[in-house]
Image 1 (cartoon, rainbow, N blue to C red):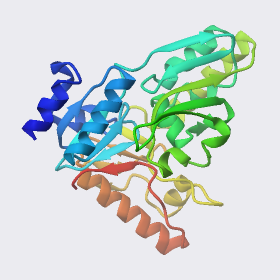
Image 2 (image 1 turned 45 degrees about the vertical axis):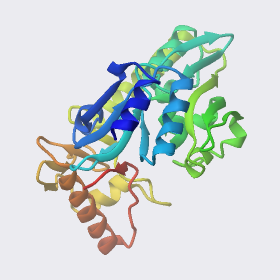
Image 3 (image 1 turned 60 degrees about the vertical axis):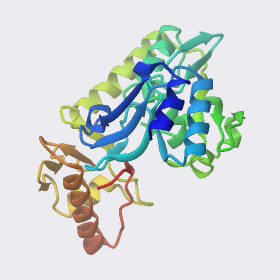
Image 4 (image 1 turned 180 degrees about the vertical axis):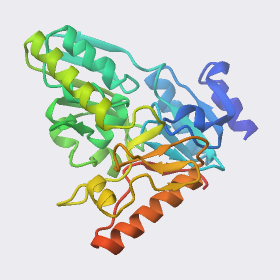
Length: 302
């Protein structure tokens, strides 16, 4: 590991390399053990070289944004976490197009769109994630999806090649994409939005913000919707109908406000959350014969 750390130090600034970094400080669930190595690159070239070095040294790695859809095991992640977030979040606007690095927050992009009277991105204004994760998962809400607004995305392939792919080549579907299938890393994306009415844009963003505040447990740490939407059903409704509203395991709880959310009520461990998710799935399958697939990504040792 020392050799690997020495090689990393030749790529990024010393302060950009952390060891035994607690992942609970980098996830919205606020749980997760230490990552052996946690590195924060500033440029595309640094990302490319970091990943190349990890492969050469046989070090497992995982790329994260702000950790809004991530559950890390209590024993941590044995390998390297690469955080593309605050050091790679540049956003530019020109002629109806927003170009943003993968670490840019969706809420910030939405605000820039609003300031320039561009419509179509209001749906993403309250999603607590970064552009990289949103493109990867084709994030969506209130009838809008990333595939509706994307022009292209620049990615790093497993072979170290940098490609700019048009939206039709990203194969975006419900929480899926070619990015996931081919293990690409999103570096940047271009969003194209039509001209809109400033008051209508603001009204829609306020409407969505109010809906989230009243219907979602934003006051507690969580990873958003915990389960994917089963075909023909809504996960939250199935969980509610199974009598699991408020069901708890340790510090983890099925939200009383929205049963589609598992929250950290206080002091939850990753093990608590995983056990609760298993109990919920087992009960829903027993009651309705519908399995629930996690939407939250799980990495590390549990």
